Image 1 (cartoon, rainbow, N blue to C red):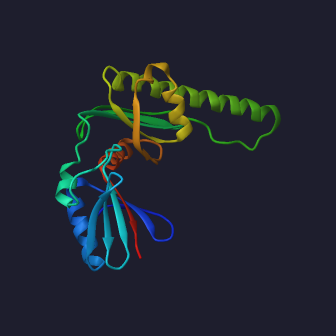
Image 2: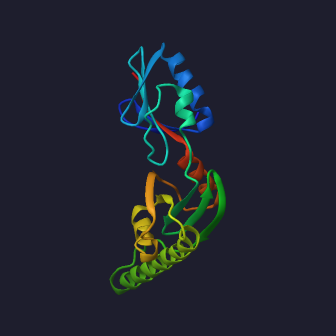
Image 3: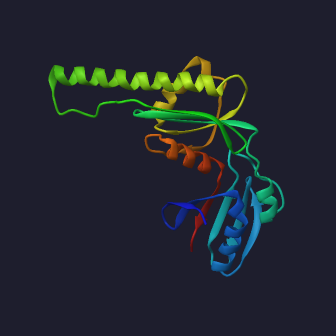
Length: 212
């Protein structure tokens, strides 16, 4: 079982919690008439009798080079001792510092950024400037909390939200030491439930599936 994301031409991505990976692989083989497991390019690969395939990859861009066996693959999944999450959109942000799979400290902030206007001329220009200033304030607040929570020790950081917004925050010179790692997390305006799901997705095994 896991959270799926649709793809094209039979390709989909599934996010599977570590505890369920072995069962997922077993079920895949049962559904497709048996399979052969191999390891290549840092992933565990499955080739089923009916032509369906999967490629399972460890989170945090970890390369897997162990035996072609589900148990060994699961055992190789170890989150970094310390790592962070940074989610930023124009309407808010979430920053979290984690030890393993436990959130040590977090901060969630929301900022009101006005939507678009149909007005024209100088009114539209004033509106655009005000909206840009509101977004800038949101990014500055996100950067301040990222400095507080994610600096002081080297750690990988998983990011998500809006690419331009995240880039604005990471442009802060105090955050240059951070190492951004995958996966990119496409999330709505951050709230606690969104942050919790983002942490779970960052820790999940990503499986690309092609159904014949």
